[in-house]
Structure formats: C-alpha cells, structure tokens
Image 1 (spheres, one colour):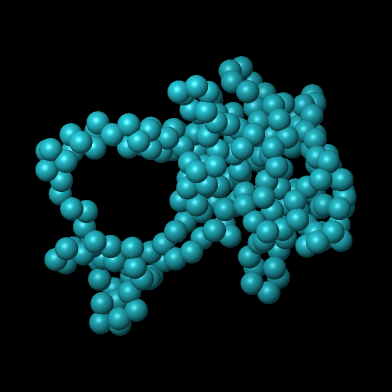
Image 2: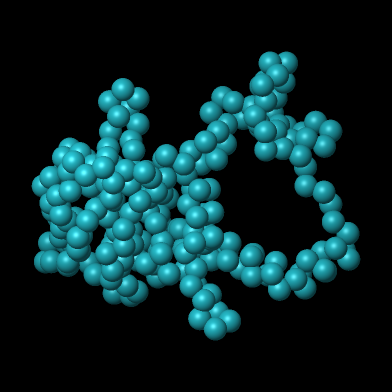
Length: 220
C-alpha cells in the first residue's frame, strides 16, 4: 500500500495493469494485485502448520472484536495513520500480544487485551466493583505525575466476549474525582464480563485526544 503523490494519478479508483487504486478520506492509495497461486502452491500453504495457526489466530481476533467497533475507534484513534485505521492497529496488537498458550491450544487472554493504546499516564490502584446500579470504577488521583492532568477523563469499558457485547463511556469522570459509576443492568446470563479503564486528554488546539494504555481490572 502506498500513498499517491503524483497529481496526475490522484482521483483514480479501480484497476490499472497490476495495480489497484482506491480512495480513503480523499487521498489516493495504490497496492499491487495479489499474485495468483497454482493449485500446488495452495496445497503447500494449507499444509503449513504455521500458516494454519496464523489464519486461525486472525479469525479468532476478528471474532473477539465483534461488539467492540466503537470502543476500538475511540481507544485506538492515536494509531490512525493514512489508510491504517484504529481497527487494524487493534487487530495487529491483539494477534501479536494477547494470546496465551495452554499446551497446543491458544486463546485470547482478556487480561492481555487492550481497549486503548497511547502515551498518556494511565490509572493507578484502580478497581471495578459490580453494584446494583452498574459498575463502580475507582482509582487513585495521580494528577501531576508525568503527563497526567486533573481534567483527564476516564474511558470505561466492560466487555463480554461470549455474548460479543460491550458497555462503555468514552468521556467519564475527571481523573481527580477518583471514581465513576458506569450504569448498566445485567440481563441475560452467559460468559464473563471484563472491566477496563483508561484516560484521555483533549488537545484543545487540535481537537484530538491523547489516550493512555488501558488497564485490565478483572472479571466483574
């Protein structure tokens, strides 16, 4: 994938020779068409244990991320570069960093999973407790430490991979408040709910947000 700087090619959309041109946010990109493989090559690829595992992990990541589209869009907004969306960054990070092996089996470990990534100072001494009204998140006010500011806002998520469901608030309480209640009425049982907490900081000059790496707060 390459960004087209040549003005004579800008605006192209479709196939031309062995190249494919396409538009993303008004910018023209190009990529080479995938080469056709012979039947023998396809059979060799199917027999490759490493390839089978890689394809299996990729499918598991895609299934795991269902129900998290808007969460990822907010949490990985700092990873958007050209044609690379936040979703692509989340898929890559999850596939490379979030699998746990158990003998010959592998699965995504919710404790390793991230709902956001960034350089902002994260939460300290955080907890999530289920209450009658929802989930009460608490944390230590570490304003003034590194990049942390009192007005940073909490990003709170609970995720149920089995139900492919998530509940979240992008803009929660300020860091110096030390707590936030994520209201939710738990209905249909099935699968565990996992809690995550991160912080975001608005840049008033650019209207963009800087985020922290999320931290995992366990099953609630």
